[in-house]
Every structure is written in structure tokens, then in C-alpha cells.
Amino acid sequence: MHNSLEDGRQKIYPQTWERAATFDFFRTFTEPFHGVCLRVDCTATYRYAKDHGLSVFLSLVHRALAAAQQVENFRTRIVDGEVWLYQQIHGGSVVDRPNGTFGFAYYRFHPDLDAFVHEAALEMERVRQRNDIERNPAQNLIRFSVLPWFDFSSISHARDFAHDDSAPRITFGKITEAEGRRTMPVSIHAHHALADGLHVAQFVEHFQNFLNAPESSPDEN
Image 1 (cartoon, rainbow, N blue to C red):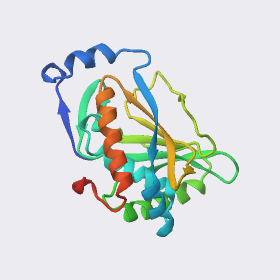
Image 2: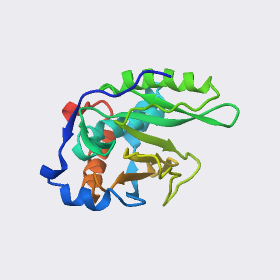
Image 3: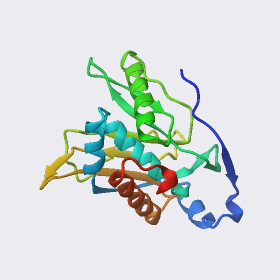
Image 4: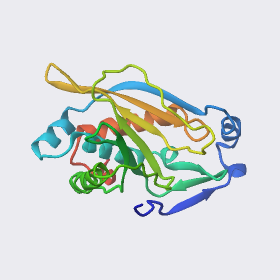
């Protein structure tokens, strides 16, 4: 098992948090996640990845992680009943294997897209050579998946309700081209005790800006 991705974090005390009432309301819901599906224009990032010989999927993951760093609510997690704000958020995703099964890979965020993709590609290959399913214990993750066969308009996820997990889930769909532009559906699910529709909208705005400028870093957006 590779090292934990946990790093700097700050404890949030709900009693003095502006989200105290919202947190208390949603934290005990049987299904506290809310989700939306929408389309994003990934033309610039798709072209950049193809021109530089990079994985399109990992390039999209990087742009989403860069956006998540900008939204405090996407960096907040519930761990053992306590609320923590993380300094940085990393990624994890499903990885397909030659035998038709899958595993989970975990990617440490790097501000530079090329550096992130090269390192993440090595992690994906490592997972493809295994037959087990590893679960990284880190909480400061966003869980990614991709359904490249479907131009979907809705999606749901398998969940273990007995397992305390507040990490957002983001799924990419089939990339399609029309009039010289490439777009894809994106599903975003977030824990309502930590993030509302407003915060999802803020994330989407940053995500689209980063997609439009694949060479930009989080500090520049």
C-alpha cells in the first residue's frame, strides 16, 4: 500500500462555523450527497493533451483538482465526526485492467499539469499490474471515474452507507465534437453538510476556466 496522501489541515469547530445549522441538518441524513450533471467545454485541454502526448483523462482530472483547490468547501471533510479544512486536495480514480476488472489509483496534486499527468500515469500503470483493490486512507481526495462510452444526462453511485466518507465524486462522460468544439458531460456529487449548490457552481466556474487555459496554474486562476 502506498503512502497516505494526508497533509496539512485545520480543524473547524461547528459551534462557531457559519455552516453550523446546515452541517447539523444534513450530517445525519441517510443519503447526504446531492448531485448535478452538466456539460463543459474541454476543447483547449483536449487539444493540449493530444499535442503533448498526455492522457486526456488525467489532464481533465488535473484541471478539476486545480479548480477544487480554489473552493474551500471542496477542501472540507468530515473525519471521525469532526470537520477539517485541508490545505490541499488530491485525486483518486478507477483504473481499468486488461482482464476487464478495475483497481483504484491515487494521484498527488501538482500545480503543473504536465508533471501531474506524468506522475499519475506511472501510478495508473502500477495499479494495472495488480489484481487487488487498494483503498488509500486519506480523506483529502476527490474520487473520479469516467464513462467514456456514454453521453450521459444523469448518474448514480454505489455507496457504503456504513462507511463515513465525505469526499466529492466527479464522473466524466463521453467527449463529443460539434462545430469544432469538444464537450463532455460531468457529474458532480458533494456532501450537503459541507457544500451547497452555490459551492458546486463556484467549482464549475473554476473548472471551466482551467479547462480553457490548460497551461495555467491554480495560483494564476
